[in-house]
Image 1 (cartoon, rainbow, N blue to C red):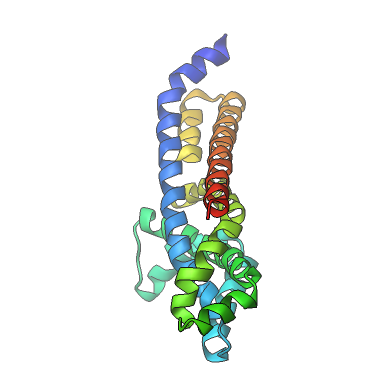
Image 2 (cartoon, rainbow, N blue to C red):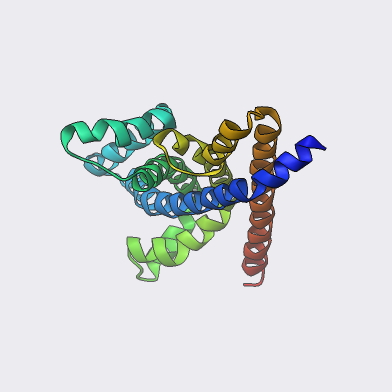
Length: 220
């Protein structure tokens, strides 16, 4: 009974933090896609001058911890005169990190489209970029949806790291309540439950998106 009363009192603060968690994750997903798509295309080009920097970026982001990246952006860059607000630093770090993983998902999806599709489009007079936009990308996105959705679900959990740069989201909100109630176990369990429910919600949206894309594909 004591736990129920505690959770009832903590619910408004934790749910507000959960709302910020979703907003940060969605903002980082959009940022990651804006970064990931051009990086994926650059890595597919046969020009090392363009593909090599993109490959280095992907390797760097995937090969270093997100927490370290966040510290470099928020605490490290001010030493060279570059400063960000906590919100900007948090979303930037999440976007740069997710962009690397999304670029790999998109690159694999684009590469999975048969070369015959490219050849057929070229024979009809479409150039590389028009073929990519009108023919290849719509098919590649259908292939990439599961991996992209997994990245979004990972972002929901990764937002917990932005609490280290004083950015209020679910985890920091939970810690603030714990600091006044001294009841860590029920509150951390409640936070874990909220993260789980958010993941289940986005998994359901992922399945719905896949079904709609498959129906649209088969109706053609």
